[in-house]
Image (cartoon, rainbow over all chains, first blue to last red; front, side, top):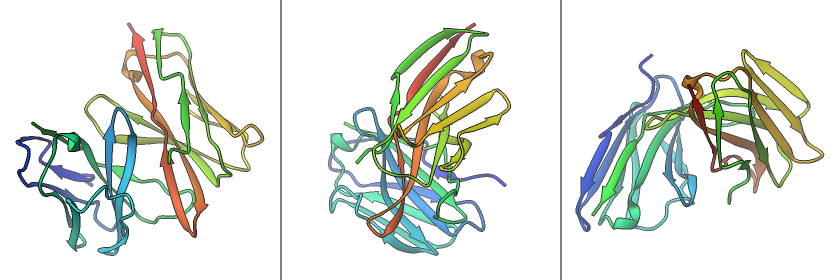
Length: 115
Length: 113
């Protein structure tokens, strides 16, 4: 299996622009997660989906952030408009289940810089 | 909120030495997991220890869990340059009616050849 695939790997954009990050989870995994990693706050769960349905978006920082999962093999995280404080590494991850003892599999991340 | 906190934040050792990283957490857990993140890459699962286990081994990794002290340690024996990475503990708990997996901020390990 190719693992969780994210694109783009690196993105530099100007403040105010729209940013779209993409993710393809591991085939057969029912759960998809979006995390954000910064030096200050560490790894934060933004939102997760089960069978394409958003379950918990309490970690989404503001209305500028939105996430969709139109089908089992694709998800997007959109920031509109972007701000310099959104600069971070955004990880997509997937898992078979979301329960005790379960392992989640991370993509390589999308490194976002907003200038 | 961050559940697990790793200690130290950074660790530098010579190749061949052992590396010990610690994780403390605040509330009761079901399991504790350790992940590794190489520079510029995603996190990779290393090992899971259940709350009713005290010690677990996997190759050169040894994990201990002390639920009375709410702490865990990860020991990497005979370290190699390739072990250079950040190591995260993740606590696994049922909270607020839903399952939660919470990561610490990590220990950055540097193994000097």
